[in-house]
Length: 463
Picture 1 (cartoon, rainbow, N blue to C red):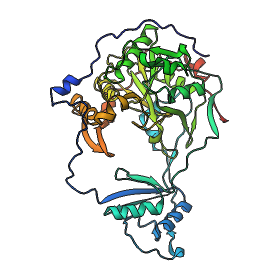
Picture 2 (picture 1 turned 30 degrees about the vertical axis):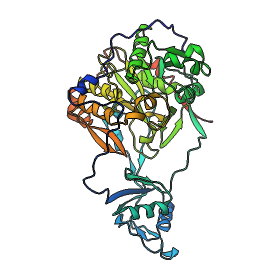
Picture 3 (picture 1 turned 90 degrees about the vertical axis):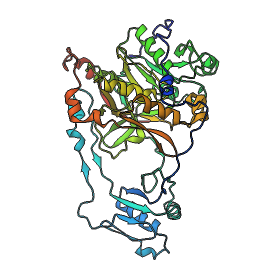
Picture 4 (picture 1 turned 45 degrees about the vertical axis):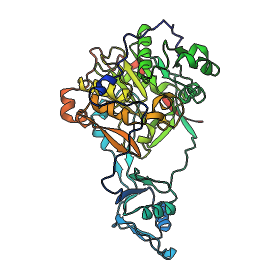
């Protein structure tokens, strides 16, 4: 069921790209090529409180030994003090609870779980941690001493940590669709200056998913050395300094020119994709789960933007619905070509698009049943990192979002850099969903989809 090669018509930009710089200029002097200064501290970073999770009784005993102190289930909040180690046989954990293991199924009551039917099974009940300690540090010396004892690197931006540190996962199994189902809509990877890494492309090659990689003319030889030429689409522009939104709009037009209802667009630094099922996340071995999401989203008339959550925001033991409504969609997006809103903005174009759609009374869907294994922001060379973030930092990026959507966005200093803080809660409240509910298309009938959804059968197979 592999998708045949589609033609490549000459696609031009439908209009000049709205980089939104003028909108920011009207508010303040917009400086390119400059790092915004760090904010002046009005108060100390301390006291700082860290949540330390353990997942078994044995690990909790090990934490007591590492810290050289007695721990107890009835004293989970305490101030860390540097002290002389006590006798090892006194470094114990005392359990005073009758039932420390708690399973949570509250996600089953969410509206999203009510919609998830007539498709693949989603089962992701969660376990709470065995115990969580809230440890407060009054100064840097205490924090450093603690880090040395638990052998985990943490910072002031760290709010919680699992002890002991989790080892890198070695995958023994993967999910494969029994009937070799593939995505129906074209899949575009927008890439610039990353012919050496091309993480998303390598992933799709490995799992046999058809795709196009969309590049600028000067990068053609670099990519053509390692990717089949019929998978390469060359943009009619280069080095414009407007970010990836212009290229994403070009992919949008390319998909429309070929008669598709939707298209996928991906960042170029995604290592893998994972299916969440029964407290486990295993890599997917083919394109079947992408088609599951396409078929589900196609049931609705007012979900123009959908996408995948990051794997690091969805832990194995978390209770997770199959998807959530009305939040931001990043890095791996499924977009309806008739959506009235387009990519715009030199920075944060994905957040701007998500908010444009939500403020227009439509819905977004962020999926947890299929996750993206995204590389860390700004760690790879090329892309926006090389084009402007390495020179000017992230203040301009965050400031643009605050100017365009000031009612829900603000600039904040977090994690050692300027960041944007967006409040999506207003779009997720029951009252908002009652006023702007997800709507099925008129012709949707689960029985009419039976011939395809019956193909959505997945097996867990050894790697």
